[in-house]
Image (cartoon, rainbow, N blue to C red):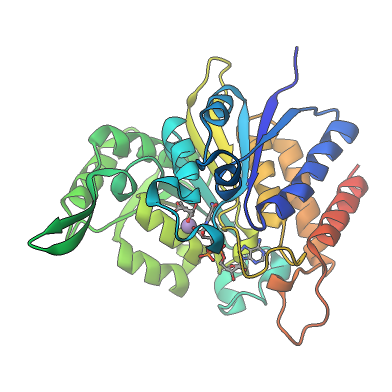
Amino acid sequence: MSNPSLLILAGDGIGPEVMEEVKRVIGWFGEKRDLKFDVSEDLVGGAAYDKHGVPLHDDTMAKAQEVDAVLLGAVGGPKYDDLDFSVKPERGLLRLRKEMDLFANLRPAQCFDALADFSSLKKDIVAGLDIMIVRELTSGVYFGEPRGIHIEDNMRVGINTQRYTEAEIERAARAAFDLAMKRNKKVCSMEKANVMESGILWRDVVTEVHADYPDVALSHMYADNGAMQLVRAPKQFDVILTDNLFGDILSDCAAMLTGSLGMLPSASLGLPMANGRPKAMYEPVHGSAPDITGQGKANPIACILSFAMALRYSFDQGAEATRLEKAIEKVLADGARTADLMGPEDGTPISTTEMGDVILAALDASL
Ligand code: NAD
Ligand code: IPM
Ligand code: MN
């Protein structure tokens, strides 16, 4: 049988820097655990625009549809800020999500013990935190029509539309309830049913789907209160289910509970393919971090943890995913820190590559 296939789209800014470390980790699993992948690489975002004039070439899109999983670094950067909206780097990422129909975006926020002191919140608020945000990823205001910038009465008007069908809400809700069944059996759904009709429908449909999951405790919260509760008492949550835009914002907020945006991985999952694996793309929650690009400062952990999610959700290698997560926990416990994980007075940080080195050493030690 052939090896499972991975398409790496490292993208822009720190994307290629953190992906280098992921490639070493992939190599380690091939060599030391006989978990071999057929890895191919291609361009996305600004890098694809520079070569092809579009942020995602059709051939790359076709490849992404064929492989067992896509690993993406990050897209975007100031160089591309003035491009026409239709060819901005971010459009490449959104096309991948939409055309692969990756509707369930899993964004776990776990606070490693070694970083509990470093979070911008008090230690007892975040220590032991382990929550999962399920963000609907293929609909809502990111994709709703009508949209655009029009002239009305000699004035520019910017329009985006929040639109959800019940089928779209239902499948995201099922993903959240299924996950909750494997965790602490609690789902909190966040919307703005007090001001948005799409929020009212969201609440209704989630409540209807809940009937199939009697063992899961369901609560509803307005998303603004949810943002406040996330920083007040995040451990009250297990699974948070929310829409595309609220999920984007709430997950960056959750990142800081763990210490750094450089720590948060994600899995974007779609429907099962013919081989039974879900359509899938794995990517860190952070962006291309133009402020630190090319300086060896980027924390590769979010991207490496995204590969751990690939092992778990695409390749049924939960034990190996745990091995990788434990190796990361160990290096953090031993004091390994990239610059984002320390204050200015805390000594000298290690580089992106050095973080990769110690993680590989911890993997070796796990054998
Ligand atoms: P960002 O996530 O790139 O950076 C926000 C802050 O976090 C910066 O100070 C950055 O240095 C820091 N940071 C992020 N990742 C880090 C890491 N791994 N290690 C250490 N520090 C890290 O967000 P931004 O600055 O708002 O956006 C920059 C560009 O990235 C924009 O073009 C944006 O559209 C794009 N973006 C892309 C993605 C993606 O590809 N998935 C996600 C978010 C933003
Ligand atoms: C994310 C990013 C993307 C989003 C952008 C880059 C399109 O912020 O993955 O969180 O808004 O979804
Ligand atoms: Mn985001």
